[in-house]
Length: 254
Image (tube, rainbow, N blue to C red; front, side):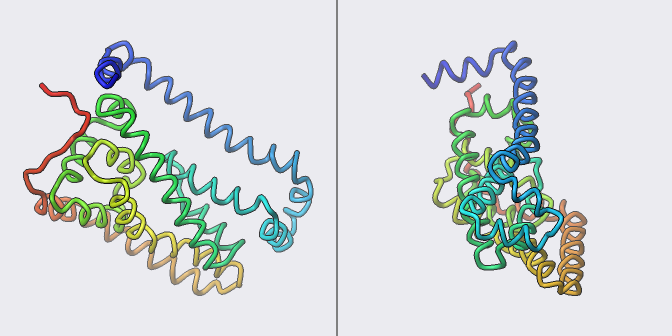
């Protein structure tokens, strides 16, 4: 079964066709999100639409709705699976609606579920299959790092600092020898501070403490530019921690 799967993804015709198919699927999923949420609200929650003019009233309705947590949790999961969707806006909105404590729980649970699904997809596709979705150079770069003796420390750094393709690394982790549980613990703990920062912005917007929103915004921008400025040095530091233990579970030999 594994050999047949690898041969399938190695086929040149498949390599040319699959990127187009995946692009269409991503477009359909994105369209489904954009159109599906308003459709769902129109069919099942027309009262929500009439309350959009009053943000505070809308927030209270969503907060006390049975389906509200499900919508928020689903948005967080989808954001991680579809890597190009930014998560900050979702986390800010969650913080605005539910406050700090509940929003952290929703965001962490959503992150764990999303990371698990992406990890499983990467493992199911294997090296050749994943190469159709993620550039081959990126796969080799990060799978080498995740195969190092200090891989969990490297995962923590990659997910803690800005500038690294975290949601794509979820897929690459699936073809490394990392255990799912260890990966989830390291990645989720590392990404939590950034999620809390976004949630706090939404929380402070709700309480109209705009000066704190500005403070967190400025700190976030500074950290982002520091991360981008020293990206190469961070890459070099990470690579220096690597051993000779390179591990690609489904990469074909030769």
